[in-house]
Image 1 (cartoon, rainbow, N blue to C red):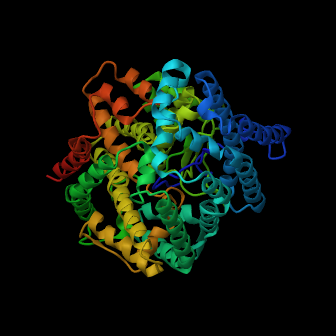
Image 2 (tube, one colour):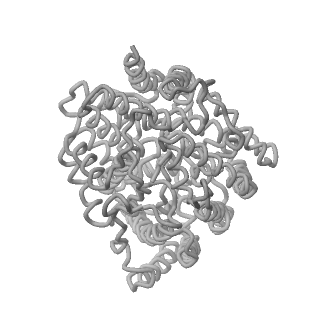
Image 3 (cartoon, rainbow, N blue to C red):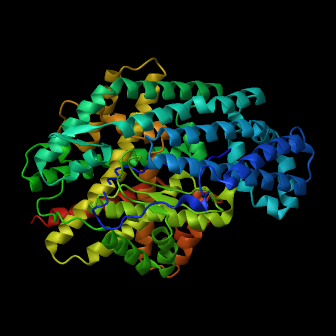
Length: 605
């Protein structure tokens, strides 16, 4: 079963000092954890899973096309109800991860649904055993069934890697005490951390937020506080990473996965060669992008050497004014509306109907995400809004996800889920629209410079930093396959990619080697991070087409978002004349970042 889960977006910074910040209204999912509606759905789910297995197990090969379609549609409805329950439980939990009752409720829901759905494990395995010609004949016979072909293609891509029915059921049953349990330990540990910054006790979000403070002494103090607390808890984080990487290595070995990354590529419906081309293009561009930019930034800051706490420092001429919520909303909605009024219309309910939870609160999960929930309801966006300009961009980013998820929902539950490589498209495009509107409205050269520099830093964080993260993960999983890793081992792997990606203008203070510990992607979604770089490069190329004045661009763009997971990336990009399998495609996207840096350098003359 596919339970919808959020993936926390990178570098999201996020009090209710910025206006009337919205909170979630989860009643569209269920009125409450003890509601009759939820209890009814739980009873239905248990009965329907058992009935589905009774009706179809051992029989798929003998079914007609019409009967196979009926089975697929029943399975899809089970997916909807299970996803609805887990979305409700998960979103309540992420609001206050330190609340034991919410944690218990989510865990109990997960346990029940895992038990209910164990009888369904046969479905994918048996479907994959269907003869290719037989399945092709069924699809030819029934057009409604043929619509699900992309789902079947993704299922059958796993055919060489599936285990016996008994082993697959075992893995399904033990999942709640495997990766899911270690994910929960990480989340609860991270949410409970407290950082002493100059005598003030702060949570993770507030401490990370200080890394963008104008006062260098505050940035340094926050960095030391982060390092001290990470070091105090480093054994827990090392244990989480060791266990998850080993568990993955064991399962990958049993499934004959050629690399630790293969499973992610398969789920993303992207070829390993395409990801490798992206990775190589970015690494080759490090000197032209991050190395060159940070040397320029050091000059602006009046520094000969940069410390890590200077990486996201604001420029000296940058306005320290905080952006209240209403201004942030107007900025993003105006940008969306200028692109196409329909996009603003799709985004409006997020603000008016309780689909956004924006304030920083004790125990709330850090970062930001847009959770699709299920196609019969709507997405929810989580932020940790602290009024920084980057928080406005985070709002634009997550709303892009939300609009994408709303449009893709038209495909139905099984076809709506967009592969991660394309899941970042609408979010990064939303950021680009917002940035371009702000840039066009810049009052003078200084404001334009600040906006350009901020965008370059965001793009470096999205592309360079995430590919460095990807390389770190590759090294981590390769090293763990050779044996247990000490915290010092993991620290060394982390540092091996930092200097390479950031450049020789940086010094790395003692303690920075532990900063891998707080990145949630490594825990929740191994090898997810390259999707950010994929999305940024893709959007840069898309935006270039938009700027060239394609009269049908908006229509093509909405069609791409509406497709959800029903098409391969080659089909989705073809109408724009783009091909991600062409290595030159990535250079085109990177050249946009390079062009922004060129303009910043020209401003120095």
